[in-house]
Image (cartoon, rainbow, N blue to C red):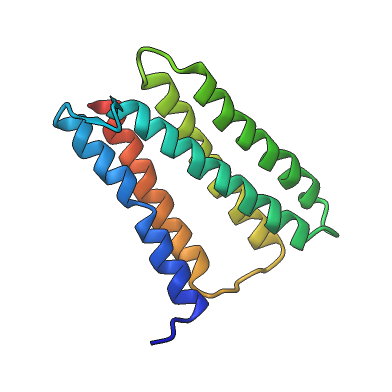
Length: 149
């Protein structure tokens, strides 16, 4: 069975939610993962995914390099990667600060990428933006769940 790139994109996107869900379950059950506090694993995974999305924003920016918004997107992509790195280095006792900063990063990078795609009238692949909307909403809810736990 051959899968289209759209199908692979969608499946990988949803599979990327699994570590968030597993770490939340461990947080609620007061269990560790890999010998670490589940909150620390959640923060680390979240920072990695935010860095990944920074790369996606970078790619969108260079795809639309002729537009003035591209310059801002390039700068923001680096800023979000640095924020994710800073969160990893900070490692506070309370993870509330880290999870809150990462939540802000996910929402901000979603907004920045959406703006670049809107300005450039980018609608391909057709299912990308709806997928990003759903994934960002889910990840945001997961972060709120950790903040409230």
